[in-house]
Image 1 (cartoon, rainbow, N blue to C red):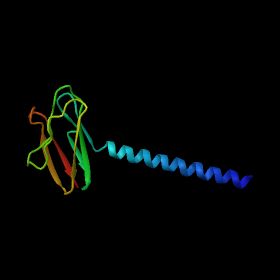
Image 2 (image 1 turned 90 degrees about the horizontal axis):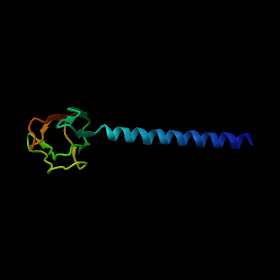
Image 3 (image 1 turned 180 degrees about the horizontal axis):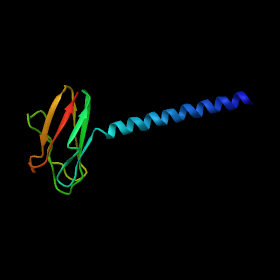
Image 4 (image 1 turned 60 degrees about the horizontal axis):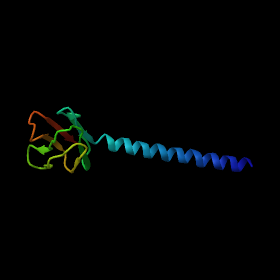
Amino acid sequence: MVRQFFFALAIAVMAMGFMTSDAARAGAQETNLVVMKNFAFSPKTLTVAAGTTVTWKNLDEESHTVVSDTGLFRSGGLDQNETFSFKFDKPGVYKYTCSIHPMMMAEIIVK
């Protein structure tokens, strides 16, 4: 009986560890999100590791774009709740803007 209790306890603890790991992974993915809200990119600067995919999501009612200043990536017009993703393979600083609203500027730093 005692052995069964400890076995059940061990399984419960392992399950909780897996849930924590899943939650941690979900949180890590969310940190690679840039939102467009109130005619601004947020965060304005995002630092990620090489090999990371960054996703931009438009929360404004107006369309926005995500356009690299070097032409490396370019989204089409993103309507409200639409997303665009790009994988950053090489370290560097990647500046971008919204081509519709040029005052919207931000950067991705890849280490």
